[in-house]
Amino acid sequence: MPDDFEDEQPQQPPSEGVRILDAEEAQAAVEAGAGRTRPEEPPRPRREPPPDARPAARFPLPTDRTTEFDAPAPRPTPAPPPAPPIGETSGPLPLPHWTEPPTGEVPQIAGEVDEEIFSTSGSTPRFRGEAADWSSADFGDFDEEPLHDDDSDVGALVDAPDIDDDELFAAEVAAKRSERRGRNRTARARTATGAAAYGASDTTRPSRFQMGDEMTTRVVTGIGLAVVGLIFFALGRAATAVLVTVIVAAAAFELYEGFRRAGFQPATVIGLLGSAALVGIAYNYGERAFPLVSAVVLGFTLFWYLAKVVHARPMVNAAVTMLGFTYIGILGGFAGLLLVYPDGVGMVLGLVICAVGYDVVGFLVGSRIGKRPLAPDVSPNKTIEGLAAGMGAAVVLGVIVGVILDLTPWNSFGNGLLLGIIVAIFAPLGDLCESMLKRDLGLKDLGTLLPGHGGVLDRFDAMLFCLPAVYYLVLARGLI
Image (cartoon, rainbow, N blue to C red; front, top):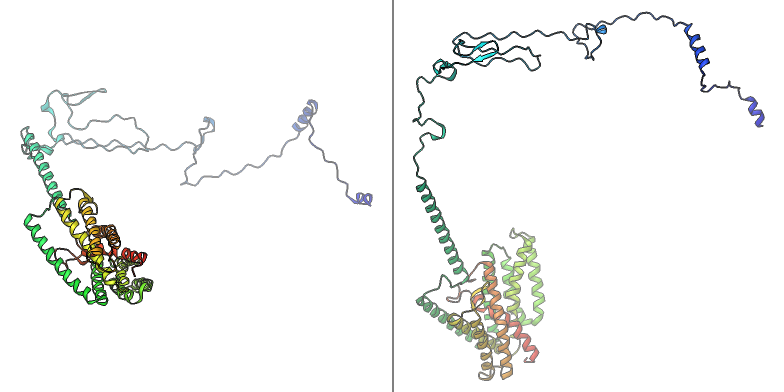
């Protein structure tokens, strides 16, 4: 089978590859080719260029191969501008275009020419010798208003007043001193304003008459509060709970109003209702009131901003609302928990006696002999001497409540001492925390409801931190 297939394939002539010729074969091939002649081709017609077409640029060709289209046609040489008449002012001469070839001409001097001015003898100019030979027309017409050295017609010296350098320096020094005195007065005014706002006594120390008048107001207001408190305490636990509710509501309103004056927009209605209601609910239902009221206040606060009752930032203002409720409502609600027990009035009364003693003694000692500030960045008027005196007064009054007054359930030395120690520890914390909030808000007092004492929160701030501490002390000691 393969043999038959090979027989059927057409036979192709063998192809010759590249063969190198020797010298004799090359010479024979040249001689054979010399005898053959190529047929002559007919001459090609010459194409004439269009009349308006320019020849293409070419490289220079030899002289014998140059045609009429190889060299560009010469351009006509522009005629020189006519010289102005004698006596006229020479002006700018027209110049040839930059694309035109150079003419090789020498610039001519137009105008009056004589042997004394610019005369061209050959290629070397000769200048005149006298100034009178200058042509005044070449430099402008100054015949009407000639310039002189004593005139003030020279640029920046026009009508320049004569100024003494010493006088100018003295005036500058006086201006700088006046500006410095003005800045010092402004700084002193700001210092006085800040001291008045935060209770500093460096530059705004009141006179003795003013201090005596303020002390009288404080004493009268304090006596009035003591009388009202004793009346409600005597009426029993329910009346005491009502008094506590009023105090908590007033303190919460002052705090929310301080937030509003500082630029916040809290949900005042919700925070105020929650704080006031927590005391009564805790008095009736005990500790179960705290999670219930806290959840309600938080939910309605968020709904307040969700419904856009006020157009404000929900995150910041909801946090401010909950801060006011927690600080006033929850801490004040522990008074309702104390009043649940039969001896609740005695518990609250003993706490109030120790806290008021801490405030009064600390204020008197700190304002009279206090020298070392306690926390100048928070409360500039509080001193270490006043703190020590107030804490000692709280402990002493606790012992008096337990031993002398025999106030139930503090009717023992140990219970009274513990009450005094708890109040001595937590009352300063409550006072400093309230001062911190006021300073951050830029307020000296949160209210003016109590003359000589400021607002309600300013008077009862120390008791807020003492209420939960005393409640858990009662639970720990089994005084219920």
